[in-house]
Length: 437
Image (cartoon, rainbow, N blue to C red; front, side):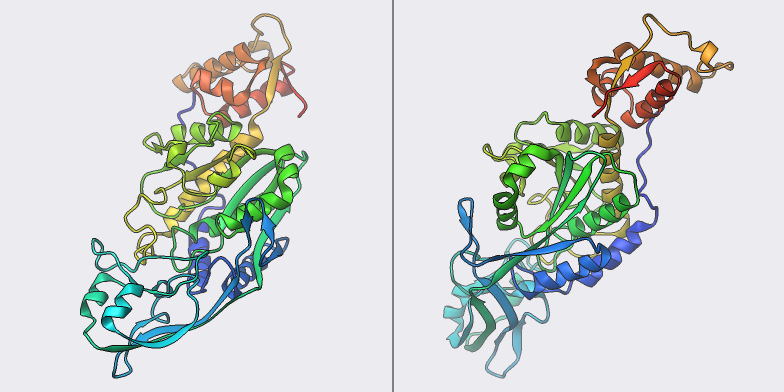
């Protein structure tokens, strides 16, 4: 049995490219809707020409939800009596409460405090706070900034539109030999945070470009949506198709740091997506943290809900809502690195390779086959050759048409990709047949 080594991203060095994409996207003012989402999708479309951009109008019903108003932010600041901008969205995009309604007023500091958000336990962090479905306005700032505000009168101005419009999202479909689909969903709504969420879109983009160059057993559907409402809209428009065609799915989020790996299962917990994710993480990141579906907080809430029940999981680095920089300005390029992004991509590539390799095989010869006359038995006995023969014989022992290759790999304690290479060798020598998908 070959001892697996951690996977490398294909192509190697892609991490530098992904970090470059993330730096380009970082300054764009994103939210659920508005020009920032369209600018982001246009950037991704240039990297993936097949990406289709769609829209849903304000007020559109989507399952139990309704598409909210569109938000366009032009400027936002709080200025002191001398005209100095003490809070300025141009200094950092998180300074504004997401979806703030327009305002132009003057307030005493005591009244202004009711509209300010900070984190006393993280005094240097600007929090990410939103109010999508209730009209309000506000500013986010570090606790140190807040403590430095002096009593007095402050000019507050939010130059924004919050009005009926559209919400945009994108999808890219790469057809394969089978109409069965692998769904990969990520977010285009989070502003000026890198792990959550620029790592997901850039890894999804690199993955899509890689898949576009490969022979594909499955069809691949990449979704670039605003979190929650985007997934709900997509489900409302494609529910029957997704339920009929989805073989496995992954949410791509929090894939850019260099910390521990994390796993979020599907609601059912034993789908092919769960099995593949656990296999690659057990092999390549045995110290990963396996969470419960009770710890969910991403769009597995939508894709795995009881009346949808798609086989969707997440392979992550540091899980959302767990790492200390989550939803703050500290989620920046000191946390996310080229190496971290490359690791995120490589683990997803390993999962896809495993899915593509997971066939059902059947032995064609009763009894134990004679390997020597087929040139499959080594003439020189080494530890490595002995392990390969043992894996080959164990694979043959379970190739009864009742176990898929992933299940066999788990039973015999081997890497599915190593098993796939051996299985195809046995097919070539007439010792195994492979079931037609």
